[in-house]
Length: 93
Length: 158
Image (cartoon, rainbow over all chains, first blue to last red; front, side, top):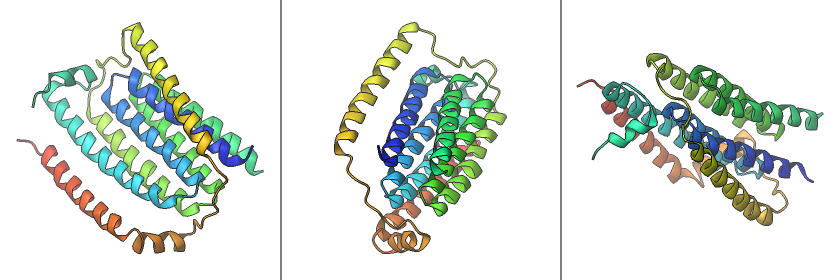
């Protein structure tokens, strides 16, 4: 087996750990961190197949996503006093 | 030598990723995710991309995780339930993850060819970024500007 195949398997493992975290955690900050973990698993696979340009763009989108997401979480925490993901069902348009 | 470091980095990355989703304290989750990011940066070094490794550490460990840590320390998270309570949620999560892994790995392993040896040096990267990918580069600047405006608007107290 060539070493790139190892990176593919490692990326799959990290990605599925991230999906599992999104599905079983209720604190929305941890859910956002698991999204970061998934992005990093994809980055690892992209670097192992020599596509480093896309890694830059994914990092850029991750930085934007985290800043906007954390601002939204802080806003919702001020309104509801918690970051439990089930309170987000009370949001209206 | 390189295969030894590969296994060390991989094992630490998987263990710290698991501890991100399994610890109850969000601070410990952030610290484990930082360890995981350092291991991924080590993998980039092993793959011959030192500039990507440095950028990864600066952006993720230096900026994003500090932001997470700061937000967590600003909030009182004592009464947040950390895990979903119904048992069938875990069953559904397990089924969804295994279906995803099975489907993705079937597709990936079929289409996975031999590695195209590309140039991952800083010179080649920056040349590609400012010639072939110049339009996405400028669009990303606009995206950053809109994110800054949005965060300032969301963060101001009324």
